[in-house]
Length: 167
Image (cartoon, rainbow, N blue to C red; front, side, top):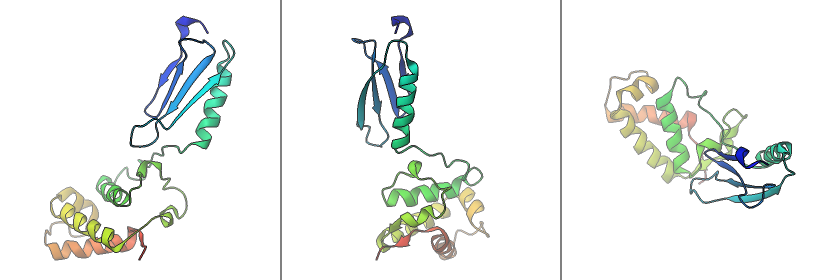
């Protein structure tokens, strides 16, 4: 490759750099997890000017890696419910960005303990009590801030959308 056309692609999760020592060498690193540690470093050889070899490799590489999923369309009109679902994932230590919620029965892969369910219940009651927009989106009678009434709504939310219990 010509030095003026140096390849250096950097996205949030994938970095592709042409070697500064060998024009036919590419370094690909992947950061798909939250800890910002380098998960995998791959070095490939490509003949001079052969970008197709690099593209083929990237396509093969992406197909075997866990790909970040965009569930934004599912939550487009319900941002406050999304926050509740994000909290559910957070409590079970799962990154929601890697879960394809369009797959049938995706939620059956997850469960929580009674203790985690209780923590979520406490969090959500507090979240709804202090957030009128969340109450407007989630509750049928959003103008109440009564803890008991909100607790009933949260119990129904957990019944309908909560993880199954491990106990």
